[in-house]
Image: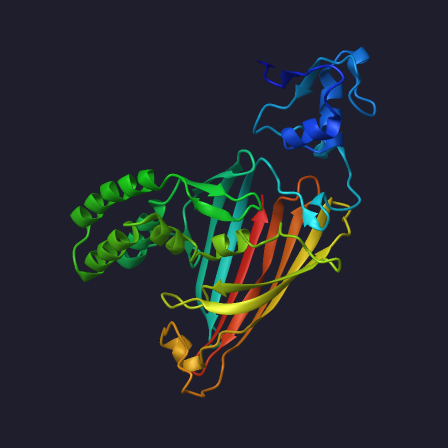
Length: 349
């Protein structure tokens, strides 16, 4: 197999290989492989409509690189991998702007914004970096904020391995993160003194013991929670998909259970985008006091009122490859003492 900067060549047995099976082998659509091969092959070796019986050489994209097929195609409906299942984007490089606002009992409590860069190489590898975090429109200036900001930076660059449906499998560079934490811990304990830094170091030491603990800590971020929603599962014939998700509504408390319905609108806009809405309700079995007090389980002997919560988000996806363009919406949770509302925006730059 030979390779150039634009393509590699694959030798096949003439008359023995069909376009569909070869496209499946390389993770491409048949029409995508046909389009790519025909850009570089001699005119007598054009695929039209299938591979001709005399062809020995097929031109295929270099692994991890886009073919360019979707950029030349104005789509009329989303790209499906199989019936009612959206095709998972294979590779891309993106920069997103993130804004998040937290309100409690009607008053704005926190506003954060930052940028993150994501590179996907193949179907199952994701590399993420994060730019400086701003709290209430400024860089962290209080000691506790600065410590949290420095600790958060330990996790980046972050390498994730994904399942075929684009959901998170595990952190791929966990040993590297552990080593970064050892270095950062020495720097922090040399620079800061007191109970705050001691407690933060203990918390991170416990979190860094196992990959699973670290992964759960990272997923308490709204960005990761929403970015890895099950957008690429099989929808019903009515283009809906229902699932349950535990959401990080309250800081340092157990997540709250919601039932969410995704609804796919197949219409493609003039800017080549399509929409998936996500609407849900709180179905957590715990009562309001149990949630506010951080209880993990519901005591069946108590009959206090249940929490009321709503979830309302809109995803815009790029029609060329089904990658996420924007995520916008809000969720709210009404408890006995607290009414908490979280607004979130993620937009491709």
